[in-house]
Image (tube, rainbow, N blue to C red; front, top):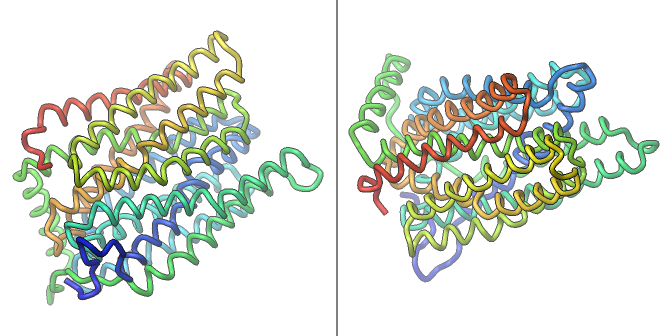
Length: 435
């Protein structure tokens, strides 16, 4: 373990490596906000609808395609990253891929190229996150993992909801109120450009200061063969270790639901006819609320444990999906008007903010505690494959139900199933989970 690891106990500060690791959450959060959750889904829906396409349906397909690719790659990429000297190189490759295709999305006028740009940039973003997460055992020790992980998400929400996101909101509002000054399309394109710059610049501390402190010696020959053997060995270890197996199965379902809520919420609201600016501001509320709540999750984990917090968060998301269905169904059936639905959306945005960062932070650090640090890449590869195959299922389920019923409210209702199954797995397998 490196000498500059954080000192647990009385010293509340973070080491240079920990700060730099946390800073990458600050850096990449703007991609989550602009490309995944708020602006790009609305922008794409507008461009697609003008071309006679179904925006939310295609967005679900594009997201699923990206997740299939990264899910297939994750175990091998994770195993390769465990070799000494490889982890940072693989991270840089994915980072460049994400930045380049986000930039492509910012300059195109074609809905197809925009969708491809989003899908490939999503692969880069997710691949970089896989390696980033696997660096957690390299930068801190087990006693500090919950705190470092939670502060990472908290800083991410600050980063995603302050300077860049507020600037993007200002551009969209300017285009909405003064279209003679700036078109909506130009406002969205500049926003995507801001995401590229912010993500790239604030990744520099991570690239400069974070290093791989645990790793395996690279085989002298047969690198690919040894890598696949390592993947198989890791899979066997996961199935033999019941605490890992129960957690990762539950994670498969609940993180799918979390990601689906993130990626489909504004596309859902846009199709229902909710005001674009008000939706964006509501998501800003989500970001702000998530900052203290993520830190609270990290602090509570030392008192009540990680597993009870995961139970609470999954149950909260179950309620969120039910309320989301009521909002859409009531609007479709004209039980209430758009202004009432807008209030629903704001309430849901606040509720999501109370658990979104916390469940992701605690899941990341809890998994880190269960795996050997020198094999963190391998195990996080499977962590990602479960998370990403799950991320395929949610948007596809949404798209399938939407295509079958032509009702967006029924599509969002289907996501309840994911959280319900996760709760069943957690309840039945709780005796195997460590606190």
